[in-house]
Length: 149
Image 1 (cartoon, rainbow, N blue to C red):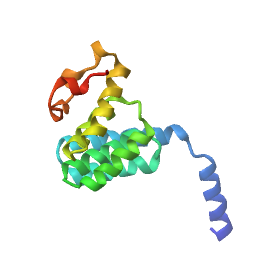
Image 2 (tube, one colour; image 1 turned 60 degrees about the vertical axis):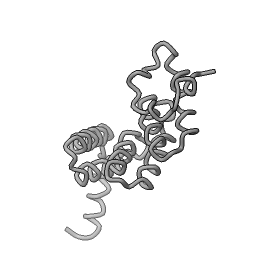
Image 3 (cartoon, helix red, strand yellow; image 1 turned 90 degrees about the vertical axis):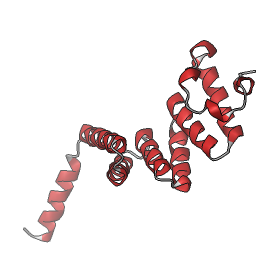
Image 4 (cartoon, helix red, strand yellow; image 1 turned 30 degrees about the horizontal axis):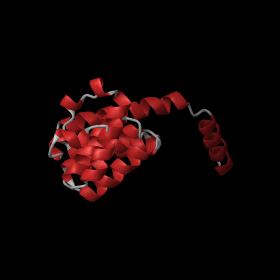
């Protein structure tokens, strides 16, 4: 096949590109990343989350996964960067807010962590705030500090 034939073939293949196929590949990469993370196979988890972010850069799941991998490996600079990226994409996600808040607590950034908790309490409603399941409440010295007042 000559050079122009290859170019035409590539053009046809690109033109037939199917968006749902990208969604399926992203879902598979994100799923594999989660499974590897649970197994503490961090290199495999990071590779899959990275591929997921390449396929869908505006999807929070890949960035959040990379943040958790970096956090568990003790790479706080990368974890902070990934959490910030995920939070820019989905600031309203209360689970992400909880994880990001817990991470900020480990860094001693209590004011920002408290701001996230207050925001989540307001978002979810005080009686359904899920505070009993929030892993980072230990970071505050008393319950008064997390009130929505």
